Image (cartoon, rainbow over all chains, first blue to last red; front, side, top):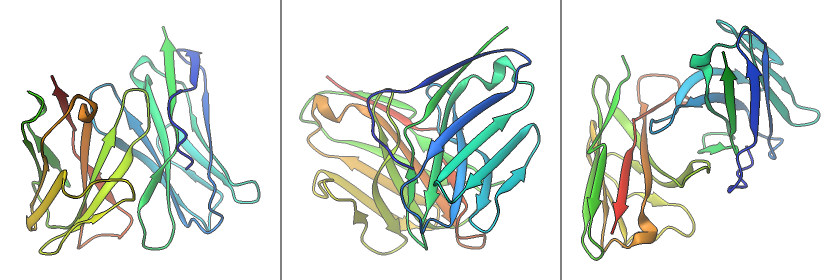
Length: 111
Length: 117
């Protein structure tokens, strides 16, 4: 991920809609990617991960897509619910190194 | 399983004093623990990585004499903010890696809100 700080982009959706949150990463050698959900005042919560040898992975209501050509990662949340409102971060790891977090996107779900 | 706790969850201290934050892995042995700092509306920034029984590795720009990290056991790491100043006010989050599981899995604590007055 590319952590540039200061401004959190916001995605506003209606309950029941599908949400797509995007993330760009900078290191073409990154081999593991994770999406985290962070609610206000809490630590990050693991949502889903994907390795670089895959381009899609599905979980419960969530799908992660990886496009290594353009170094882009997306998180799709189906049938978004008010409880999905949070800040979502992508993170990546290169080799046996540290997690690098992206800027984050605030998801606001209105009833 | 794989629960990480932090204590305290929030703390207020006066400028110039020191404050210690604990990070515990409750149901696994954490061979490696990480400390992050997060300012409002910003991402998590790694401060340091600690391995049990050895000195922590600090990220560039993080003062090791100001942020003292001790990883004395496989279930406990502590971060001590020495001579705290208002600019140290932040949300501090730890994470832990289970030595018996996939290298890539990290488990995050709930965070500690530090306010320096």
